[in-house]
Length: 130
Image (cartoon, rainbow, N blue to C red):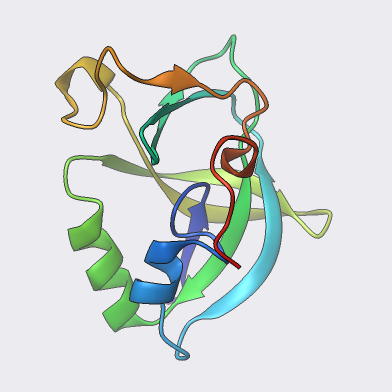
């Protein structure tokens, strides 16, 4: 069973959590965009995607995670909700998991200090390290 996950924030290539968490046993499938709409909020440099039909697609990457990396990502994303969604990667629909905020008011990462990134692309708000 493949552990496919869609990353839209700090787990994307070039960001600190990708460099810290993802091992060579996991593989980048490619860039992707969500089929569903979300709103992307950022508190400091922590992103929070909120499902919203009136929002916009998120820009990110699909990764095939090793079992160990998937477990570590799950512990890192504590406090977020998880579901499978359809994303388009390399022109093809792919089912991948996403960590998101179903009830942002309950999330410790969602505060009155967040700002919205209306492009749906985290890299427009927080630049990659490499």
